[in-house]
Length: 126
Image (cartoon, rainbow, N blue to C red; front, side, top):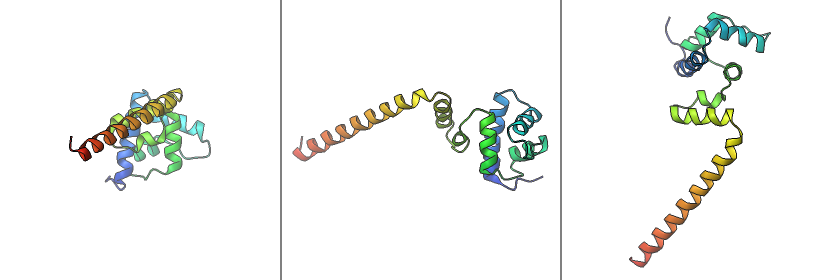
């Protein structure tokens, strides 16, 4: 069967990789999803179709799959694997968020100061 939802397939492959890293079969994953959302259709076939892009992944399904995999949903939406790893780590270790924010603010301030110094020096012809 062909891929009908190319973007969903990309996200589905990322979910499949996370599922495999969690050492879950498609059936085990479907069973955990059924336990999380008893009223929803979560069969092995549904998981296969979502992972392969045969069915579009809705926000609700993405949220459920991310919850079972203990991964922030946004980690499945970014193309950069390193960024996805950082998002996942921050999602799993919220205490780090303050440290990362402080680091980024400090780095931004240092870069702004360096740009100002360079501009001042260029203006004086140094």
